[in-house]
Image 1 (cartoon, protein in one colour):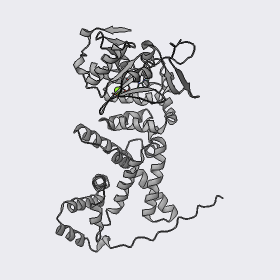
Image 2 (image 1 turned 180 degrees about the vertical axis):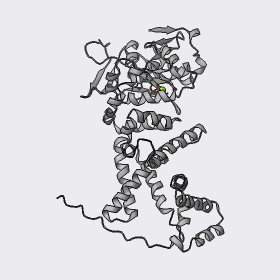
Image 3 (image 1 turned 120 degrees about the vertical axis):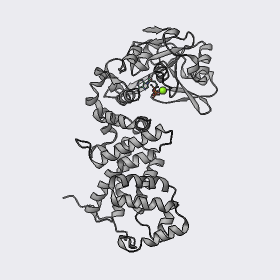
Image 4 (image 1 turned 135 degrees about the vertical axis):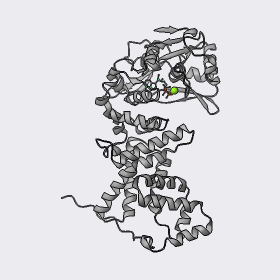
Length: 440
Ligand code: ATP
Ligand code: MG
């Protein structure tokens, strides 16, 4: 272990959030050890503003809870304490220990609960231990740096400071074992490499391709959270490219992977790159990003291909085939990434409106303007225009003009549509779903 004194590192108390300091002081005062750890220390050493401040301590969750009124215990896989200060949450974790029972003697009153599945994956990780053990349980060397508010030192258990200087993302311990314990570490390696502009150290990178399929065992809810951190944190495009090289993106989005080509030229791939780049720009501009819009764009072409297949084999109307395809694709995708219902509803809305944009007769165009998802759906149409050219682009231009026009102008626009391919069509009669072909 290396200890860096106050004058050897650039961290000072004023870089640390007041709430995190309060928690550190209170734990110290009650006689516990407490450190700032993880991304907070790492990012400060890199002169970046930390996203959040995580704290590690030798106090158990129950002991933490007893100290803070505003404390909630959460998590199953990892039991953690959340100390709430209004909207700000400080995460406090008790030092983790090793799992090989017997090797560690646990102090009285400390629980030991850990379990693994057949692939070596840790299902629960609630064995408490010392700070040395805690450091070994962390993922990367650059994440195992501990800052103490008592003496202002940074304790470095895995040569993280040197790796930070050399810009290397290096797993602590044997990479294959660490990935098998928690396959999400593969995603984290890529995320940190892109976010911190570092290389994944060779032995840390080596097993990823082969182990990438282990991600199938990760609960879809956790992968949803991770996918947002990967794709909606400002460097989505670059992250996607690296994830794809390691065969990781394919595990998260198998539906998209079916459309992947050697030269990244399919419509699906082009749209994917476009939406990720556009998302990165919005984040850089400090604008809000809507994950539903991103998922709608990513899955749009695969969904259309599916709709065409359904229409041509079933004899259903285009519209019905389209809606069935929309449901199928979303049902499939949520098996990998549990996109919450409120978002899939918006995805479906955006898609459905695409179909309706070309039906502008009578009152229809006016009604569409009132749709709660009009804005997102229109933005989506405009984006499609850039890919699908002519017809869609013209349609988007029409809608652009229409939404900003005065009432009279709008009426005129609708009247001018007359004839041509815009003839008023009767809604196709609902046809029954054909009987499933009997297996022969
Ligand atoms: P950021 O918050 O900037 O994304 P971070 O490193 O703080 O990065 P968190 O997910 O907040 O990441 O986790 C905090 C710390 O917990 C990490 O720095 C690491 O030490 C440890 N950690 C998180 N996830 C894992 C994991 N899957 N395996 C081992 N250690 C982990
Ligand atoms: Mg963090």
